[in-house]
Image 1 (cartoon, rainbow, N blue to C red):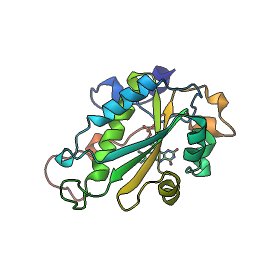
Image 2: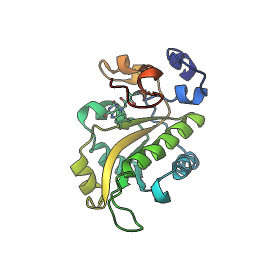
Image 3: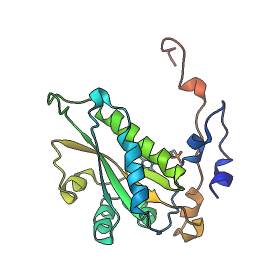
Image 4: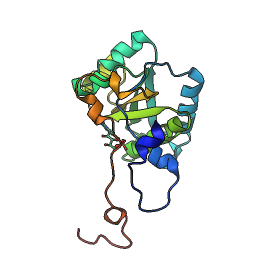
Length: 197
Ligand SMILES: Cc1cc2nc3c(=O)[nH]c(=O)nc-3n(C[C@H](O)[C@H](O)[C@H](O)COP(=O)(O)O)c2cc1C
C-alpha cells in the first residue's frame, strides 16, 4: 500500500526512498503499537542533534484508553475526526531555557523538530506512520498534561500507528489520504547570497 501511494511523488534528484516513504496519512488503524517499537521510535528521537547537546525535546505520550481520551481532548475537531483512531498520541514539547545556564534557548524548536523527524523516519522503517498536528489547544495541553508552561513550549501533537484502508474514514476524509508534493529545489536551496526572490 505504501509504495503505490508514494509513487505519485516526483523527485528531482536521487534520494534515499525513506524520505519519500514518509508521509502523513489520516487513515490510522487502531492496532496497538508494541512497546518495543515505541522504544525504538524514542531511541531514534534521542539521537537527534541539538544546540549544546541540550536535547530540549520532551515527548509525553498515550497508549492506554484512559490517557488517550485526555490526549484526544487536546485536538481541534478537524484533527480529532481522524486522529482518534491512532493507537498512540504524543505531544512534543521544547524546553524553553538551556539547562546549562538558564538562558532562553531560541533553537529548542529547531532541535525538537529534528527529534520528531528522526522518530517519523524510524517509524516508517518499522512499518508505522506518523502525522504531526499543530491543530490542538496549546493552553489546554499544559493544564491537561500537568506541564509547566514557563519551562516548556508545546510544539505539536503526533499520531502514530499503522495505516488502515481509507474506507474507515468518516465523511469526505478519504480524499485527504494522499501524499503531498513539494516545491522545486531551486526555490529552497540557493548557492550564495539571498537572491532577492
Ligand atoms: C508542525 C506541523 C503541524 C501540522 N499540523 C497539522 C494539522 O493540524 N492537521 C493535519 O491534518 N496535518 C498537519 N500537519 C501535516 C502537514 O500538513 C504535512 O506534513 C504536510 O502537508 C506535508 O505532507 P506529508 O507530511 O504527507 O509529506 C502538520 C505538520 C507539521 C510538521
